[in-house]
Image (cartoon, rainbow, N blue to C red; front, side, top):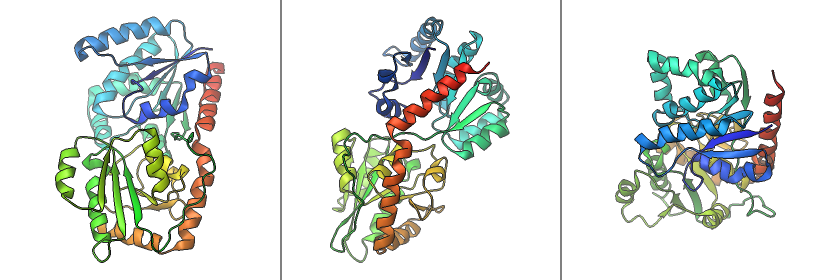
Length: 349
């Protein structure tokens, strides 16, 4: 049994690159290889050449595993890889990552995009999703084959004996926003929440880690606020230090699949403050692993953060819960589950 996995360049930022950097699945199994779907050529040359190279590669494999997102950039590009796999009678696994609801609506309403979906992705033998909500969406779209709900995986190699977090009354509470700097990730909500928290007493500090299209605007928006730190893109060791020294993971995002950053926060025992979107409610149970808030109003988040910080026993129990739960999405366990799935798919007629 040989498997080919389509991935972006692993030195890029992004959920799929991060996941396979953590899993290192090809390093642990000699029958698994990666196919990098990008190169340095202009797009008009790159993709035709990549499709030709892909066809050459798949002749020697049994299973093709592709990692699309439901968005404009990925959908049509990866549908061709799916179609080629099916055309050459390869068993196909589709692992959905990002999922934009606006693009989902466009696919449902557009006859051509709907036809592409049904002719490619919905013909996969097995589909992996990051939450029950995506399973329901695919069933509604007409997918009838096997669906597996999986988690992403977070790096744990820097952790030796993670202890539950504690909040001391004298602490300045470090709130970590670890994501791309985009409006849809809720970065401005996070900033406004911090300002509300510090209106009466400067007790909170917001660390914003990541790059993105809103970097310049975010810098202008925070001005000279001494309690907001822009850390920019962070490498592995810097990220470890940030996670280790933070008290709360905060991601009031508008839409998500299952963010790796929340899993990273849980591994380090950070209570999660986020929204009940995408696959997040499958992992973060309200009141057990943190709090999921439907609202986009900063005042609602500031009230919940204050409540959590002032509830010592609850805070500590959530931290314990998250450390215990993190074994579910450790690289070793996720890698084992995916490899077991390959064996199941290979044995199916």
